[in-house]
Length: 323
Image (cartoon, rainbow, N blue to C red):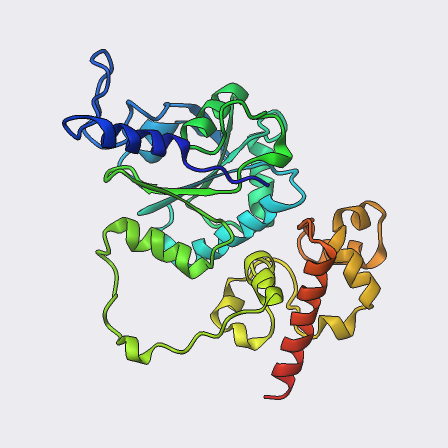
């Protein structure tokens, strides 16, 4: 899937760089907000959350707040479940500050299907805690909002759900700090951005430890990189994951899975889990029931990716057995 650049931010930076006085001036007929990136830029889109509350995007959701915003659709069979599972880990790390100091918003790009009731059921599947709002609204209004946030390039088909942008937008509206980040980033890094970086480090304990105490980081294999960025939102790999184990809400631990499952079954499961579920494969169906009916997403892995991932699972199982 394509992840386009922040075209709107690039235009603003270009205007700043080329203006004689070094200032970007809004048109005279347009009211200028007292805060950067204010109501003069963001649309005040009407939305409804999973509890049926009617809200306005700027007035009620982002004005003066630190936020994380992504766009999903609940019938997605590949990336949306991974995004949601990863953000659930981040929510666990941030604790009660979500909904108070930091605000999570997942907005549906399929509002005709994703009613408040459907969104509420989706949030329940991922054991989402209070403070995270799932929102729906008018299709055209949401399309405009995606464009304003740089998550839909003008000219792209907003109805092509499978090609929606995968970036997560995080920002502090009061300070005007906005950035795109990958939703597959390590949950501790995402939590640090939201809980410290965008809060001007007022709650950080940075500097309390010396760099001399930092461990040596070994370069990951291709398989490990795939596991960390694609699988770890839902799965752990033995007790070495430590605190990550407490963050896992869906999916089994995968330590030893290459010895417990038939190799051919695993390869096909990694390649086309959606088709196996549709065919009512007995083991796939049992896993679906066992783990709260959260479907294994189709990660669009190629043959080399699958082999690299299975090799990493083999190697890590062997390594932990030798400890």
